[in-house]
Image (cartoon, rainbow, N blue to C red):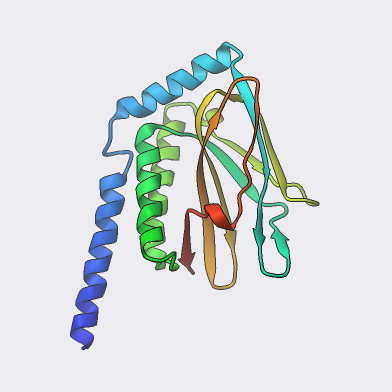
Length: 192
C-alpha cells in the first residue's frame, strides 16, 4: 500500500513538473515577450493608456474580509505567459481546487518569477507595476497603463495556506477597467 502511494506521489510530482516545464514562457518564443513589450511601449508613447481599479477581498458566509495594505502587481502579459497561467489554473481547477503541495506551487510560481526576471533583464522593469491596497477598503489603482493585455497578481497568506491571484485583463485606451480580486478568480491555493 505504501509502495503504491509513493508511486502515485512520484507520478503526480512528475506530472506537475511536466506542466510547469511545458508551460514555461522561457520555452516559448522570445518574440512573444519582445512583441508584447514593444507594443506596450509604443502605445504608452502614443498616449494610448487606460486605468485599472478594484478591491481585494474574500467573501465568507457571514462577512467579507478585505485584504488591506496588500500588494497588487501589474505585469505585461505575453501570449506565452497567458497560456502558461491558464494551463496552470486549469490543472488546479481540474483537481477540484484542492490546495497544492508547496513544491508544486513553487514550480507554478516559477513561471511568473522567470518571466518578471526576463522583463527586468531587458531593462524594462518599470513596465512591472506594484501598488498597495488602501488601509480602509482594500482598493487598488493603476493609472496611465498602456493599452493591451496585462496580468494582475496578488497573494494572501493564512496560517495554513497561500492564495494566489493571476488574473488576465485587457486595458483599453481612455477607459477605466474595474477588476476585483476575490474568491472567484483565485489562480491557485498552496499549502504552507
